[in-house]
Structures are given as C-alpha cells and as structure tokens.
Image 1 (cartoon, one colour):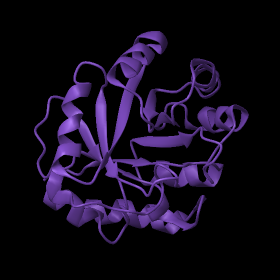
Image 2 (tube, helix red, strand yellow):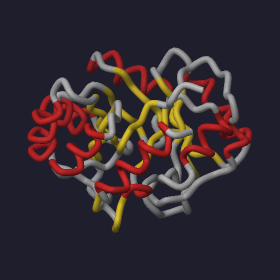
Image 3 (cartoon, one colour):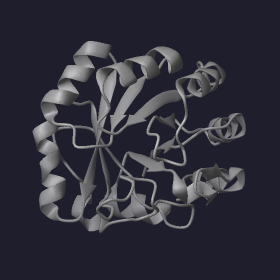
Amino acid sequence: MPTAAIKICGISTPDALDAAIRARAAHAGFVFFPRSPRNVTPAQAALLSERAEGRIGRVGLFVDADDATIGEAVASARLDALQLHGSESPARAAQLRAQFGIAVWKALSVATAEDAARAAIYAGAVDLVLFDAKTPKGSLPGGMGLSFDWNLVANWKGPIPWGLAGGLNPENVAEAVRLTGAPLVDTSSGVESAPGVKDLDRIAAFARALQAS
C-alpha cells in the first residue's frame, strides 16, 4: 500500500516546521483561531511561510472566519490551501475558493455513517474533505486528541479526495491507514508533549510508523 501523505497541523515554531520537513510531510498547518493553543498571528505565519517556501505545502486552518481574516492570512502566509473547520456551507467554501484562487479543504466531524455521507454535498465546492472526530459541544473543533470509528470511512469512495484526522499519533497511524486506506493523514495533538507544544521526536516517529507500514 502506498504511504499516505502527511499533514502536521498546528505548526507555530521554526523547530516544529523543520521537523515536519525532515519527516517529509506534504503539508504544514497554521492555525488562525484565537481560542486554539496553536494559534498564530499573520506576522508569525509570515515568518514560518518564508521558511517553508518550496519545502512543504502551507495550509491555513480557519473556523467560521470572515473574508478579511482569511484574506490577511492568505496574503501574509502565502497559503496554498484553506482548511475550513467550522460550520462553513458548500456555498461558502465555493465562494472562498473562487475569491482566493487556492485549494479549499473542509473538515467534517464524524460520529455516524450519516456524518461521513455529508461529504458528498461538498462535491464541486472543495478540493478535499478531511474526516475528523466530533468534539464535545463548547470545546475546540479539533486538536483534542479524539478519534472516531474508522470503519465509518474505510476505503471511502466519494466524489472528492479525502484525508483522515482525529486522534492520530505514532502509535495508531499505521493501523488507521491499513484499515481505511486514507491517502492523507493529519495530526496535531498526537505529536505534542503539551497542548500547542510540538514534540520533534514524535513528529519523526509518526512518519516512521507510516513508512514501516
């Protein structure tokens, strides 16, 4: 089975970015959501983006953000993709894709088969759907270390490219890919020593686990 592409989300320091690049991750995620312990300002993201240039894809994560917030981040961090992690509709996703001219990913919270099936409504509006775990009401929408029943998306054959997120770490990512066939895996808290603090050894271990699978 081909190795899944890796996205390390919640990158906020040069050391973490360098570790993701050494691990041959395809994407680094920058979080633009003030409530998150992984939040970066446009100025911080600009410095990280300069370091990432030509070495790794740059994905900005947003939660029901307005056009001005997204526009400032796109310009500062020279983002390659937007990851929408709130309640954004297909129409909103399509509008952002047209407005900014870059790829749009939509994270979908999954707890049931019906949740996974909702991905189809984003066909034609987004470039990728990211199946993630549903978090408790009132908590952060991601980065909580929670997983879901991977059988719900095993070998998903929907109309849009897809990826898997939610509680992935060096200990379980190989099994997750074996079970689901996910072409892309996204981790954040699973490679941290504390909320928002990336563990460079765990980033390396995450990649090794996939390469060995």
